Length: 321
Ligand code: BMA
Image (tube, rainbow, N blue to C red; front, side, top):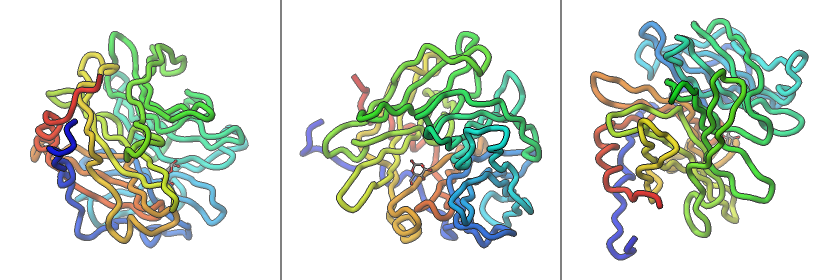
């Protein structure tokens, strides 16, 4: 890229909801330290969030909140909807975190990929639900250290596909895709997106955010990128487009971050300077996206964007080599 011609085009794609943060611990009927990083789904006309709630020990569980308009009047479950179960699942000893929800078209079930925080580090577990009232655990699908996993809603040549972010000691952390016929045994592991080094905003780590969204132009992949600074890490968001039929192929990737912490509730909290979405809802009629994101590991905020503006912006983004 020619630096002198650079114009930041992507930074106004998402508009923050004026009532942000839309959910705090005050929305919960029981005491907790924080509520953030929620997966999202539409169920019978209701927006359902499956939020990560950190209790007063520091251990996280998942809780369901429902709203008719997806913005206000959230109704939270009376007690943790999906608590960790370390007695039967030792990998959940230090809690469960950051759920991503995908409706699997083949199985007609919501699949929840979540981080199980084990003694050996974070790993990826899977659960199924039909109603967000009961959850059926399917066990660990990817060993530690691995997180930020989300499934595609459909199969590719009879294979399910998952995006995830394994960590190699002393290495960068990049986004990989893996395939499976049964959601248990995973293979054909391929790295698709690498963090950029040096001064880049996504130089340290990257990880997929909500599950990829199918569009006419390809799969929309929103990802978080981390840059380490002397005053700590900054979590921002970038966007990429994957080939519809072969999601190992990256068609476009934004150079710029398109969303980053700038409001007080994103800049200050348990972990400063973090925006971290795990869920989005696409509204077919308006062609708008509602993005639910954790703000500073403390609350949940909402931002909206037009899908067409995002796709138009992606056309201007480079094609990775
Ligand atoms: C990541 C995850 C997220 C968290 C973020 C910022 O590694 O653990 O749950 O929001 O760090 O602390």
